[in-house]
Length: 392
Image (cartoon, rainbow, N blue to C red; front, top):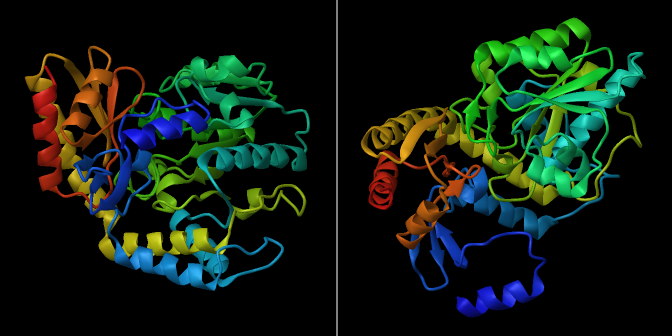
């Protein structure tokens, strides 16, 4: 394992502070390193591996598609693409979808579609976007421009012009920024990287009302909080609203690289041939992953399962808050939870890793819990026991 780590660092551009572990395989909700040490996975590949690592139906679907073909050009049709488009529009309640390769690409496409909607509908002058502080929408230049954390943006400024940041869960701060030049408001119904903050109902419902009144596009970024993670298929469903454009990735492919943005017909049809594209988006292997993922979600009733186990996880985390002085608060929805500490979480995440528990941080002082959606109460108990040992 040391050789793998050393030789990898020699050749990779240094953009990640990787943990000193090289994983070899996964089984169920556990990962195994190259020395065969077992780790309980409560990071889920950063909320990606919704089905865990041993879903044979999912894996067999990919194997069959590999034998048939992994890539066809977007100048042609395929059965997996048709099925994926039908499946995604069905579960989102949207009319049309565009497939890409990542959450960043999905948000880039959503911003373009929102701008095109403004142009088509007589608002050519509109060039401003409202996003939120602490928001995270991706690393590419457009997605980065609407990412609210300064440390991600500042090394690459100037960014996309006309972006303004409101205070999350403060509707008045949004109202102060919206003007006749605003064409989109982008928001996460549950902030992930920003510290696991759920939206207040009056906040996200208020944004919906502003957009309705002023013909502004509301974009919901469901890249991390979507696909059943919060106990609803998509987090915005908790609030009884529907966005004009929604983005998704991570759990939609359960491990295969895929992203998407979707919209109702009156918005989606603003884009015409030549307006947008991607070489690999919609390739049959990724579409087979989408179809198998959605099928397994429904067969296993994973959305309801995430709600049930997520409530139990929340109870166990609240127990740690009441027991441990270092624990300040816990928050979140379903199986997307955060545990806020009074100090930096890195030493605790490292200590948990040494004991065979994979955790993620969300900012400097929040431990993030985004495990595979197939975990059971026994896995929550195992996680809680280890975390209880490392928290002082």
